[in-house]
Structures are given as C-alpha cells and as structure tokens.
Length: 128
Image 1 (cartoon, rainbow, N blue to C red):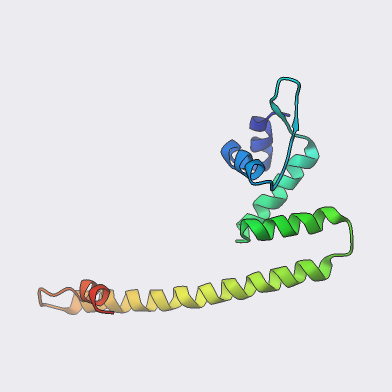
Image 2: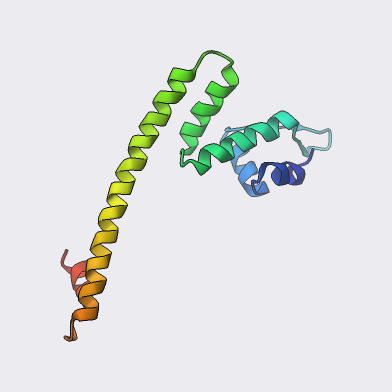
C-alpha cells in the first residue's frame, strides 16, 4: 500500500512516517518506480510506535520496544524495566507540573488581590 493509505490505517501523518524512515525507526519496501510500499506488518509496527508515543516514550525507547517486540524472544523483563524507568520519569514530571500549578495559582491569586501597579507575576519572573 502507498504511504497515504498506511498513514490512514496507522493514524499517523505521512510526514511522520517519512521521518521515522529517515531516522531508521522503520523501513519500507520500494516499488520499481521508487514509491514506498507498506505491508500490513509495516502498518502494525507504525501503530505500535504510535501507541508507544501516546504513552510518552521517546523515539529511542520506541526503537528499543520495537526491537523487543520484533525479536520473538522472551523479553517481558526488558520491556517491564523500560516501562518502569519511563513511569519514574512520568511521576517526576507530574511532581514538577503540580509544583508549577501551585506556583501559578498562588501568583494569580496575588495578582487579583493586589491594588498596586506592581504585578506579582512579572515580579516573580524577574526575581524568582
């Protein structure tokens, strides 16, 4: 199938698929005329990558997961370790985002309550 159909079936943009090929994450067969030719297996791999990206895995983690998925070996422990590392990163980000939310909420309240010309938000940004 052509890249347009592969994009439609995988839920990815054609430009994203081309990028994944460019960085060696996936590869496709080529027809005699040079056009890309995707198989159902290629589309399955694109969906796998898309789902991995939806869970926040970066490109290199997607590469590792795809390699594990395609190896056919018993790789449950390796995939679990990678997922555990990613979960730790996600939890750290959540903590950082919660701290940002708290700070922003505090600054917004201070801004509403102030009658001075000074803006607590701008002051905080200038003098953290």
